Image 1 (cartoon, rainbow, N blue to C red):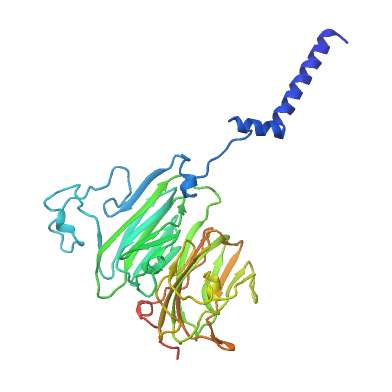
Image 2: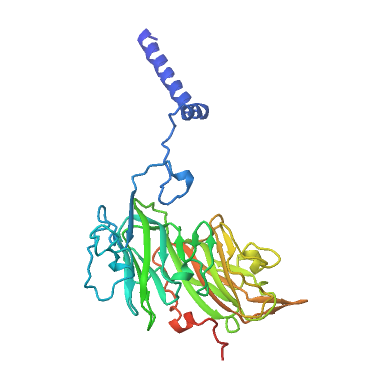
Length: 404
């Protein structure tokens, strides 16, 4: 064997040993510790993964916000309105800046007259809505609708107050992670809502005789790339009497892959005594007669115990109105449950129901109560058609009449 050949073989052996050493688990750990990771580390997209832990990571997102002072959300386009003393139906405080001129709070609010629809947001993607703040008067005559990526029907169709966990048109503070309601009617939500091509948000005033003179709102969003596996936010409102439909249907007809992330129930109790024995049931991916997930009681699902003796509002659950099952009916309950840490995942379809079941010792009894609900979930598009929104009269009446 020649000396040159032996030299080449030795060199190859050294190189091969070096490759093995560099790729060994211990060496990879040493490299990572030394600041040279063995594979690229990708920071989570800050717009979708919100919270303190995401704040240090820079990802190229651009902060934007739409409101009455910047309806397009465009860069450098805020506060450009010019006073218009000739406006025949101005929003509240619209004339307060007439003497100050452009740039001085000329158009902070919108006015939405009876029967009109206002476009709150109409921007191109990709991006993610991060926060919504709104003040509108807590009327179920005002309907929010969100349309993702040019869809013909909305993925969100809910009366404004119920979307923000305010039931029965009765203010109550909410201090949760996803929704915050502050005195006296400041409505906030922090559900992340990604969109890829376009988003359009509208508010319709369906009242036949009441103008909404002051609509204050701000929708904060980030222009950023949206990961392929990010689904679209959906919300759906329903209402019915449980002596005609029991179990009450919170959600049905969902088709596609997604995650159920919570619900809000405005529950009107119509019989004195304890009402919350009913089980919630999640029928997942083809379940028919029996569900995959079956709760053990209404108070259990909303993470309470031995009834709801006091109003409370926590990060994931709450009963916010000062109601009592021992009071003379009707008793008005506002109950929310966010599945932030425990989303209900489905691949093909989902149905969610809850029983209206009370206690008349020593037995349970079916309840003829009045329940309205909002279901919140993420899913792929397209979504299945929503049931028709309950008509205005049905939404606005304090208590639905008993079925004939």
